Image 1 (cartoon, rainbow, N blue to C red):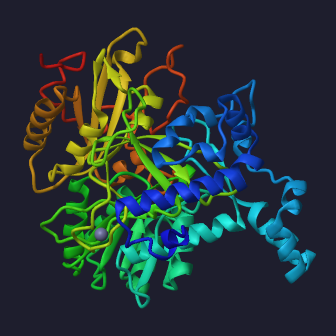
Image 2 (cartoon, protein in one colour):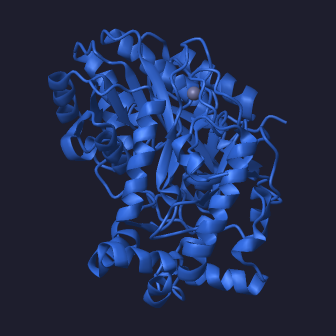
Length: 526
Ligand SMILES: [Zn+2]
């Protein structure tokens, strides 16, 4: 079977065909691209006695070691670590290939040279956001930009976009995947797009002015920022009656925030809006989307392009590959990447419903889908926030509870030491801007009981803020990414992450303390 089919029929192949063709493509990719031109993987292959021919099924990928973010971060001894993963073509190997000779005969040497440059010369870069560690650069060649465009065009199709839509890209203008994936998706699909650059470039006002002027059909951006801008639009009494899609990326999108966004869109005069999430990461050099689903239904997962990469789901503890539909950690291997190439990249992201292959219940496409909630455990692990007072805190759950709470408009979690004493116990302080229709007491009661019920822990204090204070705390318009979790514990030898600064926060700003305020430590229900 011809592996071209994977590309021409990317949304129409069943599991068996996908996996059969993926391994054909993987073998060719390892033989012609990664094996000869990646110094890192050449060595891996040598030490493990592997060759491209060792991969007869997708399961054979397990012979390759996985790579984590930590393997890519530079250290004092190894200051350019990410460079190890860069493909550096060997001209002698390339010129000896039969395909090269034929191309040279047909189109001339100059054309062959240009082709190789297009394929292998890095000309573009995005990097990780560097909130939890130093940013890791990922390089793209023109070939990679073609792939980014293809992936983007498909993302638009999956979101059921139309070419007569107008789109406002509200991702921060930065060397991060989200902005550029959106940019290239728009050019590939041929849709009118304005990039505002997010809050830091134009501010909330600038974003609102553009939205009012353009009257877009689609807004795409980070959920926290989109929510912030729409909330302001509602407060300003704006109308925005064309909205059909709100597309979220850059952070996870809890059901609660989707519900809140839908309700804001309705208030602006757009009751029929699809709120869709995307999922992507720097190391994949692409993103995937959900397709539209009924308001009373559940999303059917992120639609994965089978020709551009292989997704595996592994047990986060043992690293063993799991079966279809089993929850676990997402691991990604590209099949088309040039520039920076990492095979079996461990994302640290956990997906609840695993990877499934059946036809999508909403759009009918048959392709691999990542189903259910994705939690980015890696971020919290890196921030060493996973333990408070020796108790494992499920921050993903905590975020979900806060996003879901209808009494809360925006929130920030702060972790600090009691009395700022490094020897003291950890304290969890919750900063919120509440829904004005709900009393302070009710907000406190509701949040405390939900937290105790679901994660057996509650905040030491709940501090109320007005809109401006919350904007300042979250860094909206000041930082690239809003700070929803802040670690203000004094640095100890154990805490290696950079200090996350925030505006000085103390309970005097607007003090309403919860009934837990008397406790000097985070209460844990036994
Ligand atoms: Zn679908």
